[in-house]
Length: 97
Image 1 (cartoon, rainbow, N blue to C red):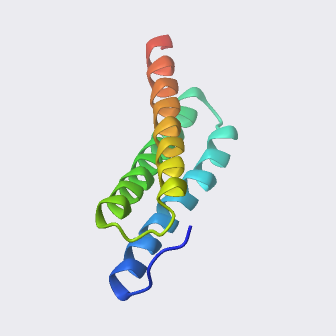
Image 2 (cartoon, rainbow, N blue to C red; image 1 turned 135 degrees about the vertical axis):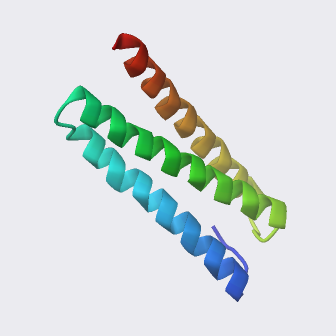
């Protein structure tokens, strides 16, 4: 995704990088959960980080700093779907217990 280059955009890009890479790393930890409660706690972190990633993508859209708006919309849609999946999984686990 091509994005403008300036100090403010660098901060936003870094925040998006941190939250999105946290989703990946923490999801890997979810897959190795040692108990139901461990699995659930780690999945909550994934959900929070995915939602934060979605926030930063929406923020980027509002600032209008991306050249490829179609690609940005695809990323926002995918992030939104992932948040919905993680949130539904959390509700399912809570209802099961």
